[in-house]
Amino acid sequence: MVSTHQADDLNSFLAGVERRNPGEPEFLQAVQEVAMDIIPYIADKPIYKDLMILERMTEPDRIVTFRVVWEDDDGNVRVNRGFRVQQNNAIGPYKGGIRFHPTVNQSVLKFLAFEQVFKNSLTGLPMGGGKGGADFNPKGKSDREVMRFCQAFMTELSKHIGPDTDVPAGDIGVGAREVGYMFGQYKRLMNRFEGVLTGKALEFGGSRIRPEATGYGCVYMMEEMLAHHKESIEGRSCAVSGSGNVATYCAEKLIELGAKVITLSDSAGFIHDPSGITHDKLMWIMELKNKRRGRIEEYVREFGGEYFEGERPWNVPCELAFPCATQNEIDKSDAEKLIKNGCRAIAEGANMPTTPEAIKVIQGKKELLHSPSKAANAGGVAVSGLEMSQNSLRLQWSRDEVDDHLHKIIRGIHDQCVEFGTAADGHVDYFKGANVAGFNKVASAMIAYGVM
Image (cartoon, rainbow, N blue to C red; front, top):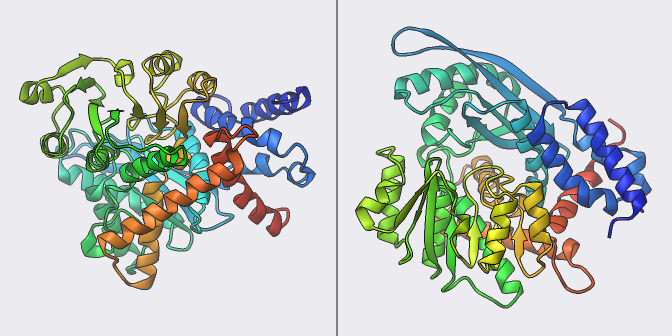
């Protein structure tokens, strides 16, 4: 229970953040979600308040903004805006993805960078938090256009990154192709072969199961939550949103563990297959989305089921939910539908996919387990951290070795959530647990460094 004094402290803190960051709703939402747990936690710990640790965490170390100029295939000069938000490096080099999408702006990247600080802290690996990107849309562009853009982007970004400074990775719109083009340009500019980007191809320093890691990690987190309550994934009906890497590899691991995946989606709508999406059907979807660049509605013509245009899958009865598409995809109404339909647990594969109003609804239903993205979504950056280790050692681990490391990291994250989020009645608040555990490690390092 939050006291009146703590509520006043929270409101005062959030008002200050909003005053310093006007017009940045995504960033403010991310800060609010963390502050609601941290302000009460530090109420009786004056050192955190005296040194303004949370205020310092919400202020990026620096934000680099730059112009990206490139030529399209018709010889037209094109201009985009690039960013790198270096949020906090108290426990290691800045680490976080690069996103290419028309919606990229400073608010979105600051929200992602802030979340990344806590997420990376939870992994137990020495990684700070950052995020970057550009308002460039790779869809509809030729390979050569994407290459020219990536080379122009890296020409400027290379001045601000390095294996011991800032190690970017992929994100929405940035896959193996884009990482390859950027790594090649960095290597050409610096004349050094070093682990400055993760998500690379195996042939030049990448790690096994990196594409699968976020989706697999999300399922492992669900597995740990259920096991803590003496339950399992096997036989459960699962609603998954999205159809990119996170969603499809989440579905793959669920199928492998004996669950029944009944939905997938894209930006145009979702498909519902009551009989279950099998491994063979999933391979067809992966080819559809990754090679043919088709729409998820084509699945119904091939395999049956039902397609719901312009809708999200949360009104379909399910036992387990995996939002793996984008931020704020579960609103209050969706949360109410999930509860009404008997959903047992939610693991967030996307970054901040649940609105604050939906979180309140879900937290009012204690039987519904809910892991936040900073815990359930950490598998990707965990394997990126393992890729950094392999690059430093000049080694490449086997698939089983990497998967075993990933599983142990997710189990460790779950244990931290339980340690810091368990109430007197035994209920585990996974949001509180993840926020407090992530905060503690970074805060301790910041205190050790003094005022700086």
